[in-house]
Amino acid sequence: MAFLVTGTPAANAAEVQVPDVRYAHSASGDLGTLEVGISSDSAITGIRARLVSAATRQEVAVVEYDAFDLVSGTADDGVWRTKKPLDLPDLGSYDVRIEATDADGDRGVDNSAGSLAYYVAAVFEDVRPDRTQIDTDHRQVRIDGTLKGRWPATRELKPLADHRVDLDVDYWTENTVRTDAQGHFSGMVTVNDAVPVQAVYRHDSANPYVLYGESESTRIDIRQVATRWTFQAPSEARTIDYGDEVTVTATLERETPQGWVPFEGQSGGVLYEASSGGNWTSVGYFTTGADGEAATFTHTPGETGTFRMASHSDDPFIAPASANSAEITVLRASVFTSFSAARTEDGGVRVEGAMDFPDGWTPADIPVHIQYSRDGKRWTDLVTVQAGWSGEGHGFSADIADGRRGHYRAQFDKTESFRGATSQVVRVGR
Image (cartoon, rainbow, N blue to C red; front, side, top):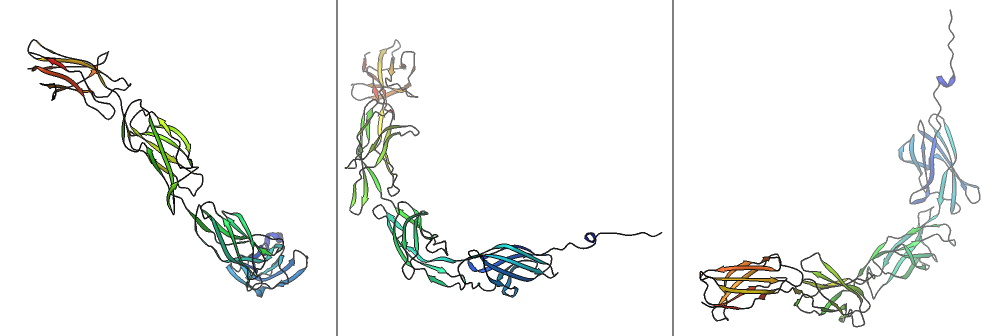
C-alpha cells in the first residue's frame, strides 16, 4: 500500500520579509543630512534614496548605499545617516523615496518614506538685554544680538541681512526690528513685570526658506519702590473709656533718591485689630491724596487693639506697605453701687457691698480689697474677697474681727479691660 504526502508551498517555506522603511527625514539640528530608519529579518546591504522636489515634482538627486553610515541600532534594525550633508540645487522641501535591500536579497520600496527639510536654520548669537533689573521709572530695555543662518549643504553660519526679528516680552511680541548687513539688530521693549525677554525669528514670506529660531530667554527682574506708613494719630499709646471715639490719620510715603516723599493715588484699607488676637474690624477704605494722606477715619473700639493701615498696588513695581498704630487700651467701667460697714455685737466690723459693670462685660474674677484708714488718708488692705452675682448685682461681704474704729472702704483694682473703682468711705466708731 502506498501513501501520497501532499502539502502547500506556504506551509513548507519561510515567509519572505522585505525591509521595512520606518521613516526618512532631516537629521535633528542638521537639516542637510538625511536620516533613515530601516528594519528587516537580515542585515541591510543596500539603500538608495531618491529626492523629488515638492515644488517641481522633479527628481533632483539619488543617494546610494555607500553615502550612508549606520549611526545607531544594528544592521537589521537601525538608523542610517548620510556621511555628509547633501548638496542640492535649491532650498525647499524634498520628498524622499527609499529602496532598501537586505542580505537575503529581499527588496523593499517606500515612495512616501518622508521628506527632507532643506532649509536655512535661524540661529541667534550674543543676544543680550542692556539690563536685567528695572524699576518703575526705568522700564525700557534694549535688546541687541545677531541673527545668522545655518546653510544645509555646508553647515556654515552666515549673517542674515535685512531679516525681521521679533523682540518678545513674556512670549508676546513687543517690538519688531530688522537686521543690518552683518545680521546685527537692536531694539527697545517696555517691560512691566518680572518676565523673560528674548529674540525670535518667525516665518516671513519674504524669506520663505529660513526656519523658525529663538534665542535663550533672559529674565528681567524688577526693583520695587519701597513704601511706608507714618501715623499722625494716634501717634502714641492711649487709654480710653469704652464707647469713646478715636481718630486715625496716616500718611503713605515712597522712597526716592531724594528721600521719602508723599505717595499719591494709592489705595488700601484700615482695620482695627484686637490685641487679644483673632478679632478685627474694617474701619474704611481710602485712596491717598496729593499729600499721601489717607482719609481721616473715626472708630469706636470695642476692646484694646491697634489700627492697621495697609496699601497694595496692582502695579508690581510698587511694594505693599502696612503698619500698626500705637496701642489703644480700652477700659470698661466698674462702679460700686453700695457699700456699708457696721460694728457687730462681738466687737468686729461687718462690711457689705455690691458692684456693677455697666458696659456689658463682667470680669471673670472680681477681687475686692477691703481697706482701713485711721485718718481717711492712708489706706491699708485688711482682706480680699470675691464679688459674686447676687441676682441684683455683684455682691460681696466680709467680717473683720477686732475691727478698729476708723474709716472703711472697698477697692477694685484696674485690669487689662476694666477701670479700677473705689467705694464710698464709711466711718465706724466704737
